[in-house]
Length: 288
Length: 263
Image 1 (cartoon, rainbow over the protein chains, first blue to last red):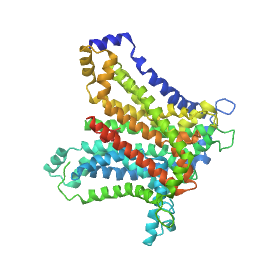
Image 2 (cartoon, rainbow over the protein chains, first blue to last red):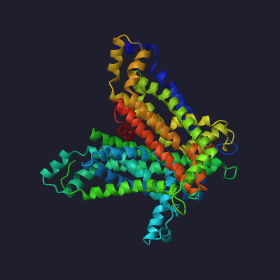
Image 3 (spheres, one colour):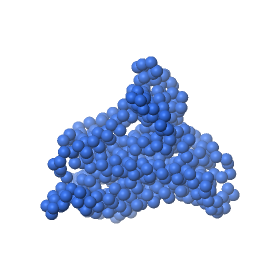
Image 4 (cartoon, rainbow over the protein chains, first blue to last red):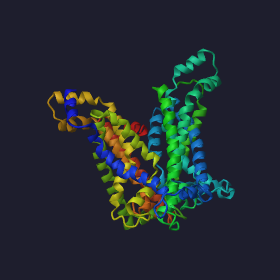
């Protein structure tokens, strides 16, 4: 330790993190700060609340509503399916590789948003997709039922492809934390399977579950690439509206609204992440 | 958790999810090899003949290489410093890496475009401007992979042992610490490469023709071509993952798959 202490006296601790902090400041914190600042800036440089009013007004209300509903739907469905999958994968013992294969796949698939994902679904559930064609062969006209890959329900299915794996990653520690001895203790005291789940299992998993659902919500709310490529910008989501401002497709003079929309997105996503962190902290208290 | 009852329900959910994960990928493969009449490799030969494809592959690989090298050059010393000398800053650094998730790429683009070039991004000059943003986007993955790697070895004991044997700081880092972090560094590099090769938001809105931007562009006119490109990307990612796993197992490190899942 003496050597470490000797060097410690030579250089202050913050010097070693300065390069990291400079990069973070220039390319993360400063742009984020610019968003906040310019959301409140009028075209002549003064302070204004007009941008915020427009961004939260009737013109963009639908975008926030659709983004919110899409995020909520994929977070809830992905959350439930992801939790069931996690429980199944963690408790099935027979194919040894199942758990590690599924968790490795999830690590990559949860990042597998974006362009390739959009085309994977065009190839399967698009109007000329293979699954669509197979369903037609057995007499189900998928697009005749009003379904479209570019519609709300289509986007829900596509988003689940990265939401379910993300939930598996989030839930694994909590599900692994359910100790067999707790179940044995409950059964020893005469509890039925239903009672075990109602009184022990579900209450213990609930904080991790809610934290996971909130994280999935933030994840879906922030996603841009998949929806943009899939629908060519025809679906009314907040990130796509922000994209229009960046591309300059919106009439000049009200660029501040783009910043206000971006600020709205940062606020929604940050709140969700904060709730997630608080709940995950609660989980780690009893799993460690 | 062990259960004696028949696990039919659990098998059903696993089968359902595996099918859901597999079908789009299988469809992607079949779709890219078919035309109206039958099997064909036309989509692939058209892509490989397109000079723009090779340009975008070259650009994406260049960005991936630069980002990975610079990101590790920044993050490895930072994480080592924090663990050895300034542990009071660890939670600050972790908070900043998590901030990346609170500022989604699309908001980063609009914030940065306002600062760098006015709202309409036309004259940014060089695609290398993407590199520092990609370093930021991969902060959370690199930090967590390296942080977990450092925690899994007893860093202080290694450093003290090396020093007591007469090693200087430089040779301690090069010959003792880095070899012990090989798996963590490999994992961080893999995650960074995946982030860069898949990144669409910044490159498309800053108007640079990276592989995903080229793919989206092809998709507007030729669905088969885009499917072929998507399949190439997916296969490349999995091959890279397998390569990284094999190398790290040969090095005797932690399993990369487990590590990637936990970051």
